[in-house]
Image (cartoon, helix red, strand yellow):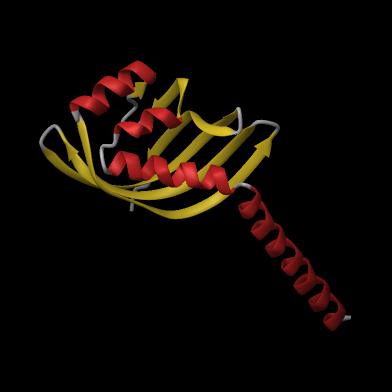
Length: 146
């Protein structure tokens, strides 16, 4: 009885693990745009605007929420300068039709109002696929306190 249960659990885990691999391969363009988002933020690269949906809502951990135009202005003025952004965990990708919900964690450092900052953030991002291109539609971050 115990060996049968162990075999079923191992088989289930193997099947579940294989599903995660196929999901990540299927969503390769999406995960690439997630990486690009972090890279563009870190490098203050204007190409970030190309992967934002025109009606994006960008919520920061301090409660500050930006629409596309607010984000564009603040980004080009370097209101926040990101030095380093490292994804530490990608915990969930849920897809429904042309939308995807992403939960992940990042470690970020930079400068805001001439003050250095470093924090860990939990993110919820909603991406929309239009004409085979994934664009960020909504993002909310919260600070993870130690």
